[in-house]
Amino acid sequence: MLEKALKGGPKYWAWIGFLLLVIASGFCVYLGQLKEGMTITGLSRDVSWGFYIAQFTYLVGLAASGVMIVLPYYFHHYKKFKGMVIMGEFMAIAAVVMCLGFIIVDIGQPQRMLNIIFHPTPNSILFWDMIVLNGYLILNVVIGWTCLECERQRVETPKWIKPLAYTSIVWAFSIHTVTAFLYAGLPGRHYWLTAILAARFLASAFCSGPAILLLVVFLVRKITKYEPGKGAIGTLTTIITYAMCVNVFFFLLEVFTAFYSNMPGHIHPLAYLFAGSHGHHELVPWMWTAAIFAILSLALLIPPKLRYNQKLLPWSLAILVIATWIDKGLGLLIGGFTPNPFNEITVYWPTGRELMVSMMVYALGALTLTVLYKIATDVKRELGELTTPD
Image 1 (cartoon, rainbow, N blue to C red):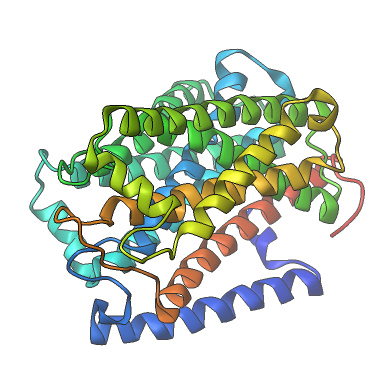
Image 2: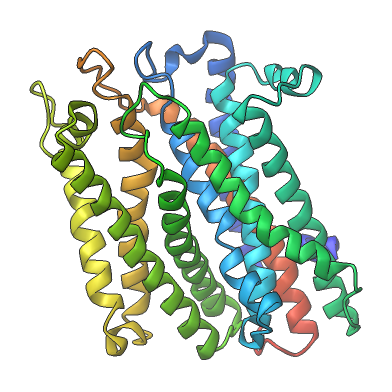
């Protein structure tokens, strides 16, 4: 089926060329990082994780979100999701590729990753993160590719796929739980030192991930006339709404616990993020934007009339994605490092070169997703499920 990715119209190749150009530009900057070290980033002694790890954290949620389609389809035989299962699995593959990319660029010297393999330390959360991420990638590649090939040949999927699918469902929960443990395992960082951090990660993942998937599916539908079905879209939107409610609820629990207990270590990060501290207000507009967008997205998604409005839905989902990205892909990490344990502020902001390397990783994920979706939609066209060529 790979040959299908080598055929396409001018728009397809223009998009591929654009992505390759972004990847090449970012890779040149990355070579500079390899030569000069992490000094090209905004990282410092006090803020040792930055934009790379923040994006890794957000994208792990995107990878795990595929379970919101796979679980109802395999566990509850919800057939309306049949057309979207392959899209969810391919989205998970692209997300894990980006996660691994952000880990590689954050390590500095990529060969150091081999230490995890040659000198395994099971008491390290990073060791288990490597296992669950690579395992999840392999599971989705095997399941997704086999199902699509069977669909193409109009034959039943082999019986061994189901146990793998069930395993991938459990695995999806594990990848984000282990990632949360990376944060919660640092006792000096009070913003992350909470028992519900893993639950917060999962709630955030299960609203933002399917929202991104639906936005991409809407784009694919516009280009190729691929139709996932109104029933599937409606059910997934309802899941997104519930997950967003839980996500906001969990965050408010953290705010109540911090201020009611009056624990300085828990109050200071929230105060820095939403009101500023020591004359630093860099993240205040961002965090209030996230808060307002989170409330606005719920206002647009909770009423059924607005939730099932197909013209309004993409906007509602985009607002939700922006809110969750600022919260989890920016504020969560910086808030954990600021202020430091001595209640001092070390301002972190990603540099231009850091952002270009990040764009390289995002473009790599977009390229992976484009190729996989091109193959999937071509197969569906062969089966007569699409009406117009791309």
